[in-house]
Length: 372
Image (cartoon, rainbow, N blue to C red; front, top):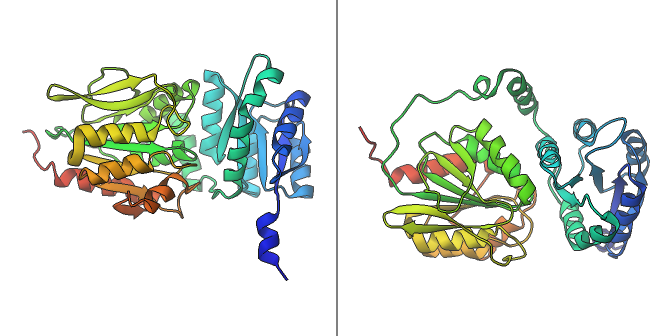
């Protein structure tokens, strides 16, 4: 008997849900070109998908954001409540599509695949390798649907505004410090970043973030974080000074680096080639922080597919900076943080819920003085 070997070689079973026959055919062809993936079938709407999920029991679902009868996010929320499973959203690269996709990630989707709006038959094949990699990562991802408390919080926020669920701290003077916090993430990172940022006080040292995300998504993502956090969050601009109480998120088509301008730290945006296949790259951010801030920085690597950021985090640790990696149990995909642990880059390995407190404690130990 060899049950373990059979389990290892069993193909990843995928169900495709999209109202476009052309997209269903293209996705099927791309996925079936990999011998480790089997497309069980497809569905053109949420009701057909529900029946096929029951009958076929897929490992991974690809789900169109915009569908007739029931939109993809509504279907996803129902699915995560009744039968949680790894879901990859297929969405258009527009600001509207980005907002809906961010809703889906908040509702429990593992990842998303951009869908071109023009000449889809000729250009969609360019996403083949990305799609296959994301399906393979999703098959082993940890799916955690939103808790009842999070769902209630979203409803209250929509009705009464952020103030109703996020009490603002009493006004405090900003610390006189030039500490820098650098955070990197990929798959599952939008929700992980939100949880970490929501735990920070408004006078936390300046934070720079590299999240693997398309340009169309980075602006809406920054706006969402600004609405739910006590720090001021924005999409980074070239030459922008890094200040306490502020968070700077890399644009989806630029590397974000830290540079010194006299006595100030500023953001530098770079349109260079992708690093580790990514732009923005976490390694690029971390290495610049290691070089410019040294032991006066804190590095955090969160959930994500691949290995981007591991070497840069090691550079930060070797420069004297405290470093933290998210643990496997709370990561959607333990690729990036797992690689950081493997290369000795992580000074601590912590559950997601413990990271903001740990970072705040590390920052405060070096910056106790508060302006009067």
